[in-house]
Image (cartoon, rainbow, N blue to C red):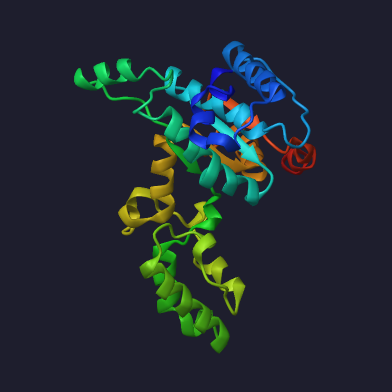
Length: 264
């Protein structure tokens, strides 16, 4: 609870705009205790309590101090963006190598002088495979475009994807401009049925495989409910795609029942 107190590092980072909330501290303590004992916890808290930090702080500490991986599943893209663009970067400042997980700057300095690598938060947004373009499938579609896409609008959409694929850094739908024929994406997206794995000539450049490597190296995985329960259903058959994790936080849990039912 020190992290979330009036005198804690988050308060110092935010300045006068920060206000400690007893409800938030109670929730954070309950989350930390549940993670410590590997118990289940159900929390209901009203607007303004600060639920995100109440679970992010103990989740980050488990990752940094115990080397554990935490999955945080949300129902909306807006909350994922808030976590990745605002909340987690603030935590990285207050829990980073300059402060250490326990805020012991002297201990951190001694560790650095001894050549010991300081633990860091490694957050990653996990997206489903269909969000990524397959460079091999894109090349094949380009060679066969006359027969594969008989209409001009479809070919224009393919050319737009080709232009974008040379410039994009992540190769995912989130940065792809709107297509005149959205269905063209189905012919170039990454999917398990068409994947050649390490035998693929574009394996080293593959956006999906690069995303998987980042995911394997991360200790804080952010995803949506659908992806989490899709993985859980596959995991029951021994073919899940998320790496092994130690804890799960289901935020916006009022939507969980419907999503889980769709996958089970």
